[in-house]
Length: 111
Length: 115
Image 1 (tube, chains in turn brown, red):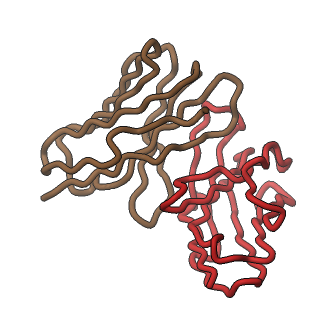
Image 2: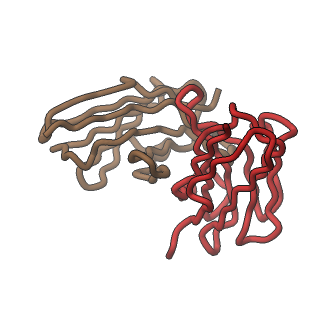
């Protein structure tokens, strides 16, 4: 299966804390993408990490990729209430054109 | 850039009626995807197009579902006849290329309720 599996399914933390979400997959990939979905809205692309990269940063986001373990993690530092959303990973296999999503991690930031 | 535009935002219909969902992708994007999201099944890919041509429709649940892309700026997803189990949020997304290294841009979806 192409889709990634996010873990945990739900995460609740206090504002200001760091949030870490994980993604595991089963096949060799070309790249892996992370998306955020706010309630009632479409998914928004956050970051893309290629298979030859180990870490990538974007603002308060840090994504790591371990191809030997077929896993990725998304770290949000200094969380804010506005970070409350569901987060999805999408591993992209070689030659694939379509993105398949798992169930996501539902993140709640408590004020 | 207006982003991906979907209409209607909400649709309530009775079982047996025809439903047509519409999508305008971002100008210049060559690929278009239709997804369906429910609590039970999550986000499912229904069909996607490259350069207006359907590439993979293996996710279309039944013959009651059909999708068209008559030109680069418009796509429709039709359900005929609709059933209560079709109730879901339907998303359209577009990307610059059909390759997996091109991020998807999603619309805000159409919430379909079939009674």
